[in-house]
Length: 430
Image (tube, rainbow, N blue to C red; front, side, top):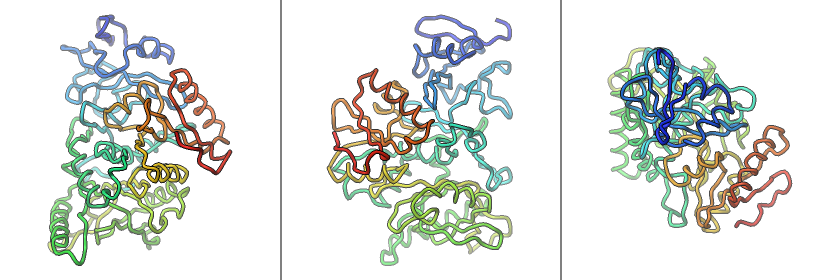
């Protein structure tokens, strides 16, 4: 076979040149679509062959592509293979636009530009998604941290709701769920990988009247101080509390609930976060009573570190997402209204993400159909896909919506829609 890359379709045994299979969108659909699923293809550039997954996505147009089926074997590709992961080529898993996420059984693998080395971390550097967003992808582009937060939320199963959960989701409970979910999220950078649980830190609930909580917070701060003092790069997460005005350096200080020390945002990072939240009610500062959650990559700022004082904490990157009062993720105010109505009426539902969903029947169904709805109503059989149509005055949005509706009609999938430009009243729920 020389230095030509070949793949084998396991079910049929057929061997095809990789360059032929991936030459055009039509070729991808013709050759890959029948084998959609995990570990259905093998790359023959090495022995034994390297398992590959045929994945499916819809971003404006449909696409079928190859991605790693195994985190432990993905680096075995021969150097001449287009799927080889070499120095400076960590994105070679996929010949088109490689996904940042791979889901294997009960864990999620996030590949991105995360580093654990203080000297290599550049404050405020643009994320891969931000660098690559163009045209129709701008609306859906998210930073690696946002995708990581989705994976964490999904593995913690906090994007699903049942009436029995009412009153049981508060900061302390979701903190425990998130820390548990982090054990099922793996972060990869180059040839190194580690569990998110090793680097994720969420401050425990604090109360001036509860000595046990005060002691737990003191222990948390001591642990965080030690790691920052040793120049470790960490993930720090928590509920958003407030943000200060711009300082003399053009940066801003952001604060989390239950954590008394601020996180400094460099000027570029502060501006990007402000831009990303500009469409929200209240902007970056938010509104009183609103739930927001922050995930940041942090390190100690340059300078001497005193043994008894928390180092100044600098954000390398940050993601902030909005949530309902029940901690269901939201993309718009209209979604909030629908979410609140579903909870008030005692319905069961899920909020799938466009990436990083844990492996379950909902994500499997979305993958099979090639669509991701805003909500899935799970107390009806068959489950009802729910679409909150918020931008039907935009041509690209209309095209994507028409594509999704055609899929629903073709597959007979029940769908509920609300065109917010046609009526301000939420249609009757199924």
